[in-house]
Length: 218
Image 1 (cartoon, helix red, strand yellow):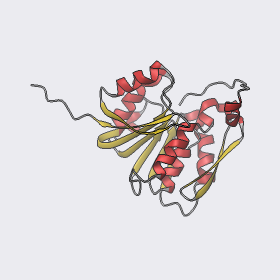
Image 2 (cartoon, helix red, strand yellow):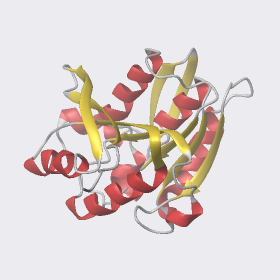
Image 3 (cartoon, rainbow, N blue to C red):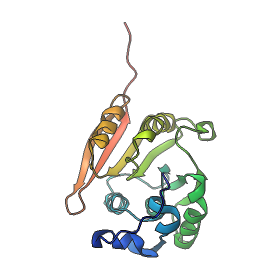
Image 4 (spheres, rainbow, N blue to C red):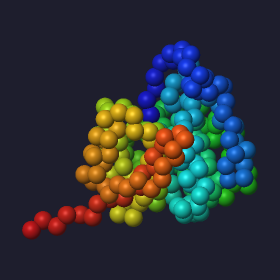
């Protein structure tokens, strides 16, 4: 979601983020995602949360074939691409500065035999939501999008707009700071939230959410 300036970092654990590409195999397809940390920062590298989300989707615990799916803060587009390979009709979104990069990754990794489809679209959380159908999606995906506290209100607002009573939200993230748990508390004001998967090696949690039923006021 956020575009941050490039800062050289010598930590070995972060060196993979500075590679010009990252390669994966999901849904019986070899994927090669371009990365561009210097130009787009966090929006243009594959984070562990995206990988774990793809692993979870590939488990088949969520029905994807023919489903209307939207990915928020897509970055490189890995999650949305995999969802399409698994049969979903996906709208992959991010902020305008990341769209050309995102579109190039989608084009390079969307094979002709893909069961689903992909559309790349601009979405800044909390803005221009009328361009997206209210409650118009079966599944909302977000990988490592919970990290900027200033965007939390807009993110919840966006989720509330996109979700119907039957929409499922899947969020994959690390719990790094208190603000991360604060976001989950904020989300619980409008959604039921439960942890459904934890990948210990990468320390990634996957949460499933759906809208709270309307309150009856007496």
